[in-house]
Image 1 (cartoon, one colour):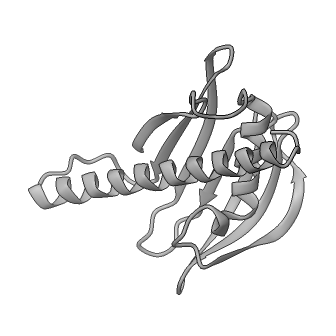
Image 2: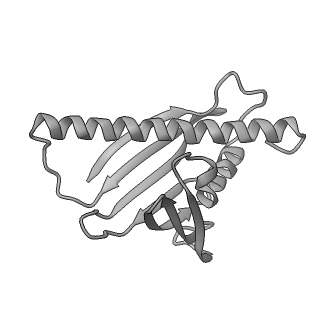
Length: 168
């Protein structure tokens, strides 16, 4: 079941360079390999399996462990040739299986957006109580805040690359 989806513009006028799909994809790949650099609450991560060829041409897949204090998630990460990111977490006890994707969209040349999508493997059921609806809305707001932070950090890193003369 799709739990939440939203989109954020990545190519903003304040950038000191023209953002390319390739640079944005490189930033997303950096997040995939080092999430602790992009999410303050992540206490650590490590790659648990070597990169292998993914199902799509040009894609790579690897295992990653991500830690939030004592809470540990084993994830399967896929980076596509188009620069998209997919993370899958298997079900674990009361926690359902879930997927998180970041998809680069370019509706017109030079206009880049990132679509963030969250799926959970649980039956689609309406949030019936006020408390359930409020909790679901708080989760959605937390996801959006985290995603804005990730994208901001990716853009900051690309600005630093550009300023140092490395390709952005």
